[in-house]
Image (cartoon, rainbow, N blue to C red; front, side, top):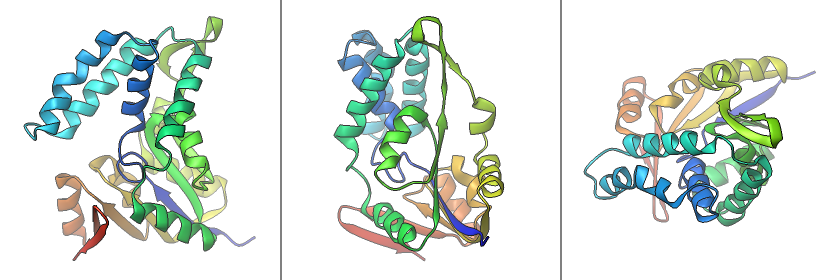
Length: 230
């Protein structure tokens, strides 16, 4: 059997114009599943990022901390319903460049792989309508009473995106020749270094500098214009 070419995509900030984790936290607060006071835990970091007084990382890290703090004991079906609302609201809020690239590669027969640190239950629904063949995200343990324990059941796997790529390539009979990878942050180094054509899309400064050193393609989308930085 001929091996298929593979294209690997980060999701948050690369396909989706926000973060699924941020949106699920907001939805859980709006649905009174998380307390209203939870928003205060990352509000200052959010404002500092909006005002360009600090980087994005403190904001997303504060939001992740809030998620992990309050998710324990949440009834799993309630979490799923909140995730479905997030996807229904935001499924079309994607970047044109990556949306069109996904469609182009799908038509060419590429195996499409999405890797993200967001919850897999939400990712599956978000990535399904885009045509992805495989999705990796954080899986949260379900305990007694069908309630989430707050523990990540596969943290050892999702922590290294390169290991995921190697595993999928072997398991799905894929090849890295003519492979493509698209990411936006230093967390995507691992899999971008494996592919034949790495693309840094709207990269952080750290990833941008890494891309320049390695002569990787850098693409920026602003409003309705896509720039390739050479």
